[in-house]
Image (cartoon, rainbow, N blue to C red; front, side, top):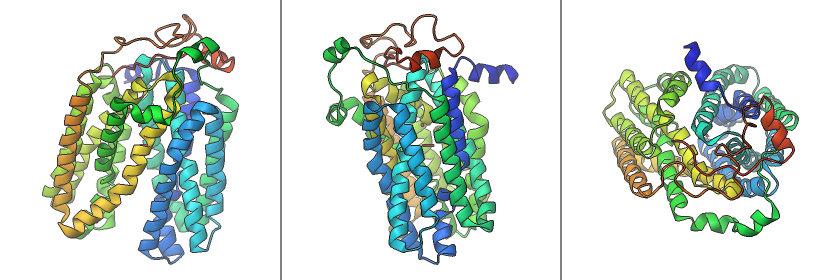
Length: 443
């Protein structure tokens, strides 16, 4: 076990671990998303419809900021975008705790959604910058593990904090988010690759239009939306279906807790198994398992069977998240990573908006069984989409190298292994552009 843990965490640059710590602290303090609906309905006395509207506006803010943050990541840099996003999140969350008028609450919730989602393209782009291509899937997996570990702990703590004071939850989240901004300011140098004037003249300008015209990448974004739509049903469709079947909120809590526990326990060992396997097969298999994992929910009649279905689609989530994030990096040009990551992030934000509408409509009109059958169909369609879209994708290292490449790992030979080398080279803005390829993202 000691050797397995050592192999899972060794070889990653120091800057990655500071970014990882920032992610963990951020998720440890993510209280507001957990108790926002209870705060609005129980503490403030608003209707469930109003709580749903606030949640939708929060999600809409994330959709709006995804593309803007991607552009900022490429133009201003990864570090400034992270600082602006995290500082803005801290301030807006604190302000939200003091809002009382329903229009003010809705407006500030929209701002919180914008600010909190703006950091995601910058985090993913910075991680791709500072980690060698052969280590990226492992790095993305460790980051995903930190997100879920922090979320599991914060979800448990949110209930205790809410029983004492809802406002304290807002202020604690604001304080911990500001700690993340301080970590970024103190420990993370800018990682955006610097291009010479010759390279700028030789390489085409990457704008949002470039991203939209990239057929293969937009296909991946579309398939990501479909997969995200499936996974979102764990938090929007499953509780409604279990409630209609006579199960209590506590029963749902026990069933969905399996998701977090499995990710925390299995993410690292599963990643060690899949790290050097064909990403095309992994995405096809994980899409099918996700779809039919939710499809099996149609046959669940007891809490144990519900928990078993959660186990099935959680395994798909563990495989899909780091593999799909690695594919996005592989398809993104080095000098356009922010915009590409922003478009990818937007697919999940849009899915978070559409999923509640989809589940509510299908359960009310046709019954929960139709929702789970639709998930199975969507999973099959996503698998076929990945199979067709990636048939012509060259193997790792088979494509053309990015101009200005100095080493397969993306840094000067002999530099990556030296302690503190990443900080020195990045701080000096002498990091060469990384390769676009990568070995085979709860945002």
